[in-house]
Amino acid sequence: MEYIRKAHSVYYTRYHIVVSTKYRKKVLNSGMSAYLKIKIRETQKYYPEIQIIEANTDQDHMHLLVSIPPNITISQAIGMIKANTARAMRIKFPFLDQVYYGFDGLWSIGYFVSTVGVNESVIKRYIEYQGQEDSGQATLEL
Image (cartoon, rainbow, N blue to C red):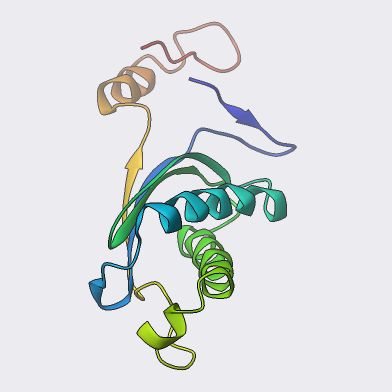
């Protein structure tokens, strides 16, 4: 497990995110999925603090494993990813304009998110033994 250290924080935040296409339309064929994965990873160029660890798609949704720093909300990060990928996909694949009329986006409004990280027993043990370790931060051992 690798902690990320910033000037005023140390964190390990991982989220499993699932975003569906608008109306669950099965528009993501294999070629589009390959391009989408490139665009998802490209998000890191514009927002380097958001780390895309894994990305994969099905015909009507994408799965992401993402590290988001504490100063960015999950909804902000998802919004950035959705906006950048939808714009790029509609430019690359003009037929999407017929599938989604006008300015109707590629992605549904909602999303699924679940935390991934240090398991509960490790946290309980860390809190239980707090103050009994050497001075400074107690260590988490898996």
